[in-house]
Image (cartoon, rainbow, N blue to C red; front, side):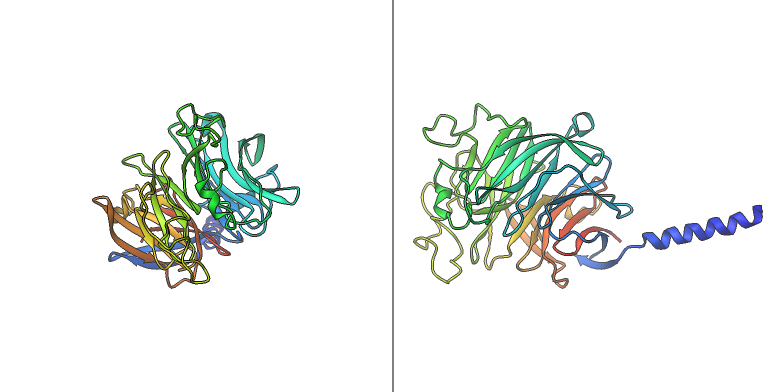
Length: 373
């Protein structure tokens, strides 16, 4: 009997290895080979991703209005239960998600999604406790105003930093001039305290008629938001129309220009507004893309696991389908590399894991991981 156990044990180990073998392929970046491997599939639009301290990955599916919990070691995924119903369609659905830095103590997660009310729509942000695979104690802490009929350009990205929650909101496409008006949340970056209250030092707290949550304005459709690991500055990117996608360093009270200044043109080939790219009192982008890459997701890579990537900025590209890598130095972009351009992937989200690997969400294909060979 003892002699039979050893072959059976070996066989079971081989079977386990074969079951966990992942679809993978090699890419090259600056002369170094890297492995790209599939973690999980069947996530239609992986808009937001956030790692739990356990190493498991929360992934929102914008199109299906779901949140998945993914074991990145096995690829198994489970639905998070008791989530609210999101308005799906257009640009709507379950959007971004972030995990509180003290999750082990408070179990807080924050997430944004679109809702419908009286045939109109908007974007909201909620905080909840994640109890295993179930949401509890949900609290709505932000509702963008005004509501609008068309489900377009909700943003929406979230960042927790130094006790504050930053939120991006799009200008809702047909309401482009709203980005220049402080009486609404459209085309803005907002700053809240972690409990949803408004910080007393927000820049427009005493401005008559202004929304007190506003941190910056003049944005189009911001779908990237992150913090620079060295400076602590808030970085944002936003979709241009036909060209003119922007990367901006966000400062309080500043006007980033949309739709008065823009490096792109309208979809019918006509100029945006007066067709100008500069105006006094409006910020210039740190970097812009023409033609448009349709950026989504944004992450500074901080690990030593892939040494030549350390300090680089990564952005998903959905129109010119690739993973965009920017090497930054002396306050400018020194080099741009377009990875995975041969895969025809709409890269939707980018996150660095606690293991130092880079994870990307791909529309219709799920989640992939990039690691050294």
